[in-house]
Image 1 (cartoon, helix red, strand yellow):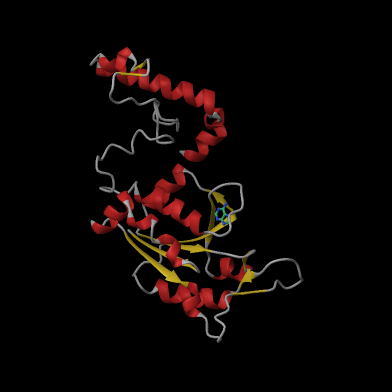
Image 2 (cartoon, rainbow, N blue to C red):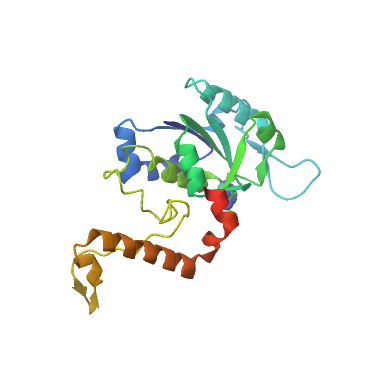
Length: 239
Ligand code: ADE
């Protein structure tokens, strides 16, 4: 997979992309991630990327010119256009199902905005879809783009050391093969820690019973902590 990011703050991406799974996935050629500075495509002497909104109002709006020029340059860096995504609180809510969907693409172009928003002609002209990572407003789309990259890359074949380790994650397809459930409780050594003991069943060696216990635990904690996930509407959307 190739992921391009268009941003005014490319340095923000350096650290998150330089550790652990994201680092290894790039080194192994599972994903290529290229970050391009939108400001490099300004033509005026002040390198202006934003301006006052027509009709008045607070804040500044990202101008279409530099962004279109930047996009048209980036688009040509690889043969497929892929999915073009604006990170904005107005977007469709990002979730595990969306991460799986994006992980199946050959290419993503993520556009991180700053200021009060994008000139509407950016969304329309680039025919971009919009993604939000939650119902709150960040100072820009950069952190949201990093969240999307992190969630997508770990789903790419070979990205995780153990091929199976994404399978049982929270929100992955759970017990009945249809429902996204929270993950079951995990334990490692020691067997007793500060008086708290690992459940006997996990020490029993009975794999069928362990699998069943984990299913029940997943269901129970989903019921208790995230009952919204069990709503029919939500199941439909995620599947
Ligand atoms: N930019 C600002 N807030 C955002 C959010 N919640 N999701 C995605 N992009 C954003």
